[in-house]
Amino acid sequence: MAKKSVSLSVGRGEKLSTKAGAGLSEKGRKRYNKATGSNLKPPAPNPKTKADAGRKKSFCARMKGVVRNSKNSDRARASLRRWNCS
Image (cartoon, rainbow, N blue to C red; front, side, top):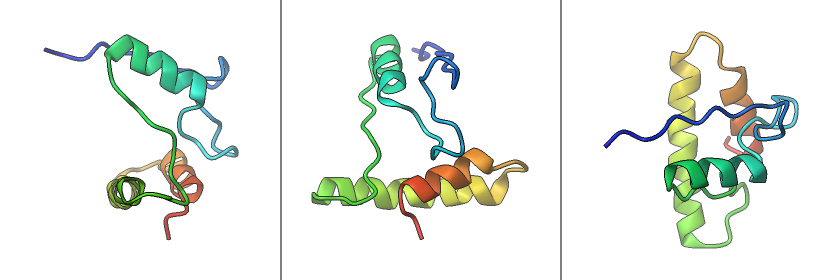
């Protein structure tokens, strides 16, 4: 079963601008989760639990690959800064 496509916008406040750290806002996460049945969580730049530390490690590893392999990775770089990935 394919996931439903959701169009999110910076103008509607669902995505953050690259200057604000990229990624989804709370409004965007709620809209996406409602439309797809997912369970996206907010960023964990300073994890307090082992689960959040694992999410951060996984996110940073995936996003570094995106930055390395994309032609225009401004949003990916901004999200790495927001998550405090070194």
